[in-house]
Length: 601
Image (cartoon, rainbow, N blue to C red):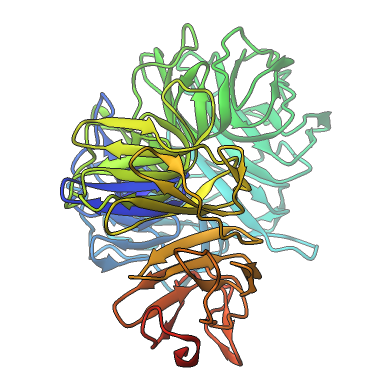
């Protein structure tokens, strides 16, 4: 199954190729929400696709993974909540965890899996917003410090859980006021036995992210606070792991922080999120600051979007990151990228993801990627792509087009495909609305007279002599043609046929002696017609056929004895479509094509 990062608006099949057009820039095979990539970015085998989304993941210590998110299924097995994948990436059917509420964070040390969130029970046992279970069996452990709101009209929650390098301390952050009955504002430290420590930095707002420095001496916080330990800190702070005292580190970020990665020696600190300024410098989505004052370093990748996850290699030479972005510096990158930690330039690693990347983790010489994903390893293509006739592969030829393709129609011989929309072809700067594609010859060329706006519908006649076009244009070749025109194929010239509609034409289809048009109009061919009409191919006048649509028509299809139309429309008192539905809605007219007025349905 192929997926794109935009809308698919047209499909045309020929004996040698399948053309797909729309407003997308990527197409790729559906890989699901959890993917393992090799060192060069290639997608490893997916034995059981994870459907839904993955918002957190931790290794089980023996090659498998615990996943959290809006998971729907793994392979063909329905699954929700926290899911365990074995080392071979298949579902572990015996490991189950029933959480009454929602889970926001996972952390593991040894054979203990820690959970944080907004819940009241785990596997039937009372656990208030934090819990610990056995990695191997899922058995709930005695570790049970309740995290509560204290006073107030909000529900307490734990957003993040991080374990100290020695495994002796679990740091929890979120929105709460009490832990184990004692005052703790939005962050706390617990021993591996579940005992609350005296550590208490006191941020005055929610802590959504915690990062512990590799040597375990400093704890970094991010969230919606503006004060920590009585000192001003706008959403980012660092405190000592021993006493919880606020350090002088103050990067002063102007947006939201979603990820923090600390270099093995404690500096620099990489910060990812949705911001434009960090550490006193302009930094988009990703930056690096020192570990003393939080001042921005010279390192600046220039991300065109926002960053949700970071992964720093042990050698500190490469920083991988994911999120939703389309560029890194001057290089195109789609939601996944790697940059050199020395010069901030994007590396050649470029898997291209369709969807937002929220999780990155080291995975046996490669990278594990999770998020709200449809595909990883996609192919760049802007508006038009050619597939093999059976849809099994993307053709090696990528049409040189930039823009939106709204209409595709093969000529009667099947050798060429007419392309309509609004786009540029190759290096031509002038926008085009019509082109002719030939996948066998690997050619795409502008074709026909130029409309002054987009072409939404194309219908060649059976004899191949004429091509009718519809769209949003008002002129073609600088001559008045309101949303409808005919083109002579022999010399690609504008025909004399001049029907006209007062709104956009979305679809055209032909019978032997009638042209059917659909779209967003109230009058067409000199007559009052709403949404759908039949036109005379000689005069351009609307025939007596009138379907009386009470709304716009977006698509139509003609068979020897039936016309099908679809869109958010009504017929009389019968509602055929609801605007809230995503399904395509149809109304079937049992009338011979080209029928006279007295025979209309």
